[in-house]
Image 1: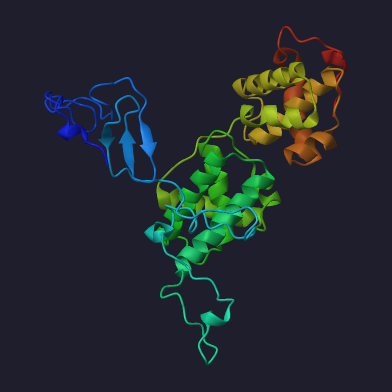
Image 2: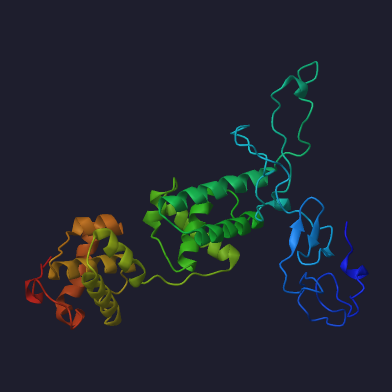
Length: 334
């Protein structure tokens, strides 16, 4: 091994191995050669040294290799890659999921003369960790079915862990709690989904998810923002294949109807569906109540009831720049 930076005769300014001066406490740690600070150092992986390519000075030694501890050959053990050992760390599980699980032996050396396995796990996964893992898998599956992003899955997992550790919902099915946590996470992240949409990807009834939803809000002492018609408008119109002009008109109609207090006590989803129906009937892209109801998850009669409330003042609800294909006085009277 060559000379080190501390042994170098020109090292009279107290340059440390990290490249900073001993008196400069605020300097950022940087490994560099004292004689050639701009030189790109070469790492000798075998010896663990950082070497200056200009003068051969060993600037840093005992460098830790952060690469894989195994070599992988493409033609050997195609199904078992030893370059990584164990699962990735999961901070949501107790102990960080850093335990080592010994798999079942396959060769003769794995068993004694009585046929018992020689190597066994001293500690198996706890029942609480197993329950949480199953819930996390269910949450991920539900989120994938309705195309929810990763940040919502992570928030849902954290909510479920808090509820599970508090043991405040004992007696409730974990799948029901997971579904309610997913509903809460969607609303907290500003992309709310309806109860029916969550029910469609879950095995739990709407009533049970609603009960768990209220209990979780009370147990965690948290709250969610009130849903509005605008939260669903773009998604419903996109699924119906309506153009941007109709979507903007439906959004304007729903907001104006709420401001004028034309739909008191009505669900924002039913108001949004009625606004979409009115806007589509006034445009060239007409949609039936059944088509809108299938997408919004509301019954035809619910759309008709909300539509009847806003129809008498339809002329005031449309935006001024809307291009009518069907005049307001020709709109269907349900």
